[in-house]
Length: 201
Image (cartoon, rainbow, N blue to C red; front, top):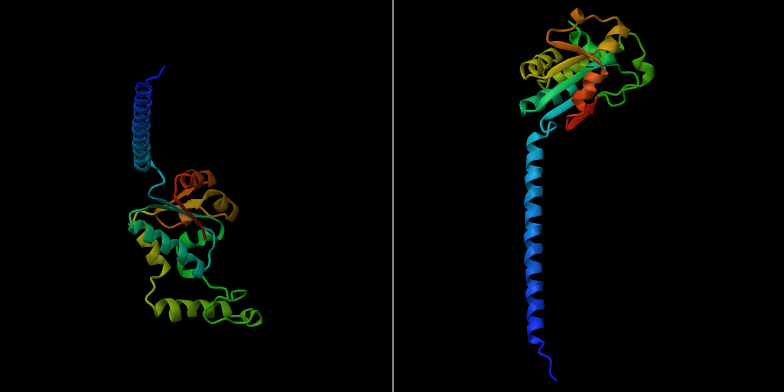
């Protein structure tokens, strides 16, 4: 007796082909849905255009980085917030920017390095500050701090002063330049949680 296997073989091939087509279509649907969800997430992503910067230092050379980065990011269409804390508050005090200094002591990265013993001599900090302002920044047409602050305000950069530091240092809201908001650490952290770039300076 001879069994006819052609029908069963055809059925198996047909089932195999149907399974392959179903798998292919299922994979296509999943890929389309994943792509849709990624695109939707990118549209709704609150971190898409936010930059959070902490300015913690109050010397002339360390006042430039947060302001330059903030103004550049804002000019590129980013939403930017700078949180001024501890000595960083000196940058946003009324008339404070013009009094920012550069300390030559323990600052080996200065363009004209000087030994600590020389840097400790009376008058060396004003001299180092004058050199930084006139010989380096001034010579290369780098905007002064006051101008950079104004640029940040004009570009919509949010300037936030740390409430706790203000309390500790006895600084009042009226001591700060116009346009500065006062907030605590939680205020900054809430903003930073949504930022895709966070910088500590």
